[in-house]
Length: 240
Image (cartoon, rainbow, N blue to C red; front, side):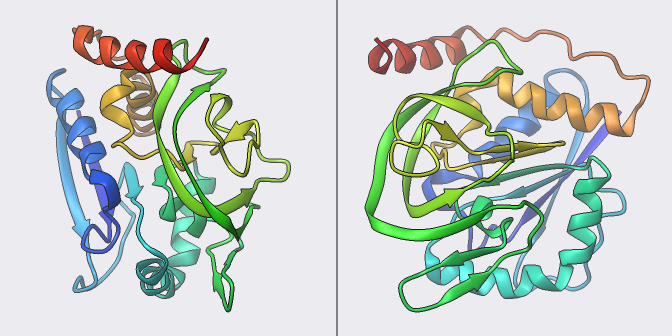
């Protein structure tokens, strides 16, 4: 078996070490004997195809970088939308999360989004900066991370990634964070996200493997003692 990961614009979208999510997915696959190919699509890349891609990853960036990336992503809106609707796995963090929506309204301009998700984002007063803990309904382990965003995202009827147990979430004390749609995981959680959340990482990998290999059942367990300790430390510190 083999999984191909497409890392979108790592030259612009890599705040808070978001590329660590790529390393985490790769290693968790390789530890199970599953080949992993990572392809980077940068501002200098020529040609674009999702034909044999199993996971798309879009990281976070500043407002300036988002504007640059969004104008380029809009050129691939049709392909990305079709990919998502056909249950392609897509992971989007912070700026990448915002770009999946209809728009991101800044103080003096509006950045057009891909409209893959029926969400909108507006710049708020001040930044939401905090450690954050979520409870998701599709894995047992709480999801932990760090949020630092000026945008407030409104997800309408979409299902959130998780209920906020500590932190802010999509907006000021929103009570919910991120979006979980089909095989899309969209979130404000930096850190990077996946090394501290092995169950979430395996959930993402399992979705990609089942789409590519219908006969695939489940990933074999790994020794996640250190990862689980890191996760539990954050949960115990912030959730009373």
